[in-house]
Amino acid sequence: ETGVTQTPRHLVMGMTNKKSLKCEQHLGHNAMYWYKQSAKKPLELMFVYNFKEQTENNSVPSRFSPECPNSSHLFLHLHTLQPEDSALYLCASSETGGATDTQYFGPGTRLTVL
Amino acid sequence: GQNIDQPTEMTATEGAIVQINCTYQTSGFNGLFWYQQHAGEAPTFLSYNVLDGLEEKGRFSSFLSRSKGYSYLLLKELQMKDSASYLCAVVDSNYQLIWGAGTKLIIKP
Image 1 (cartoon, each protein chain N blue to C red):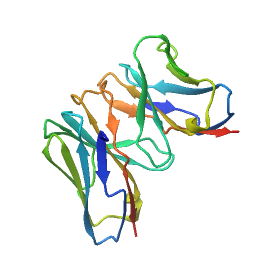
Image 2 (image 1 turned 45 degrees about the horizontal axis):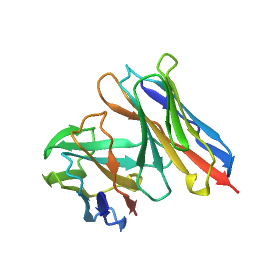
Image 3 (image 1 turned 90 degrees about the horizontal axis):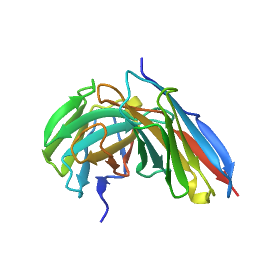
Image 4 (image 1 turned 90 degrees about the vertical axis):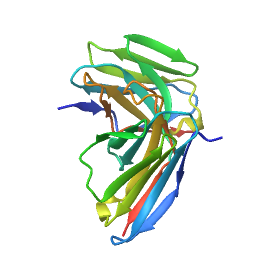
């Protein structure tokens, strides 16, 4: 069973659309993360949830809205996106949310905003 | 500011050895990670170093020098499947994880 799954794997949306990305972890971890990965740039941490509570929001525009209904599921709701938001969106989980925890990543959603 | 430097791209030959360097300037240090990411796939954990020295795991080894702000990942007996990006990340004194932009490694037959 794959540890961290993400759906959809690919998404193309217009700037006026609303869509959601889903992430599920089967590792029994308590922390989940959303990252943005753009070509030749470092991973950008967007949000962190620890025991379902948001513990970090790195100045992410409000057009990105996270939701964590339980420790196993994480969503990223998208609305009124811009072309510069096109990127690979990675979900990850870790045992406790500590920075020295190993993070386990999903395969990502490749998002294209037209 | 906080900074992590890695070469953007490297090329090596199958069967050879390659060393991928990572230098960092961060506010403090609480550990350094290496992750491997194949194209279109999830990053996967390779190593975590918090003390100086070399740690070996099969064909892969990771080295850390805290006084020099320097780490390297050493890959031996390169295989085609080692073609991937290698991400370096440092835990700073505030326990924030600072990521490098990654090194794309191309293996040629």
